[in-house]
Image (cartoon, rainbow, N blue to C red; front, side, top):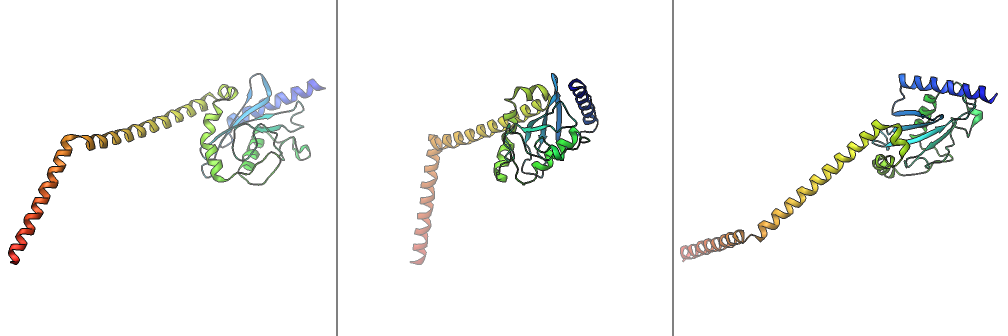
Length: 224
């Protein structure tokens, strides 16, 4: 019996994977572990109009051997300001609510529901409250955080390259700004400490004072 159900789960998940490849879910990428089709890993890209814009959030789905007759456990692994990390999330599409589970729901349905709930503010077990500012700060750091996860690097090499490219670009811009600031400071320091510049500056002051005194003398003579 267990073997038959396990075969059913494996077959169904393979079908869901092919369907997901043909018809991707917006903002989401997902794939099973090569060694275990019952464990899937996903990434969610923060929609541009949300507080998560620019963020890439890594999580996992752990399916039971009885899938699709029982729902999966859902986890978020990247700090995000909405869900606790590495904690089972209490959603109507997760194993917290087997009574509301529908065997017709696919992996795409589960991930779409997860993203929808992520964009809401309704509390649930496993959710946390954060300001939009905190969410944006976490979104900015999400890429570098994900690079520390070996499973993420193995399953999503294209996203890893994208993140590494963005990090290099930010570092390059930061270095350029730093060099420009240093050059401007050095230039100002050079000008202020250059003896030639100091001599001409003093000369201009003397000339200006002499001209002023001449004008004053001329005016006084005219009045007299």
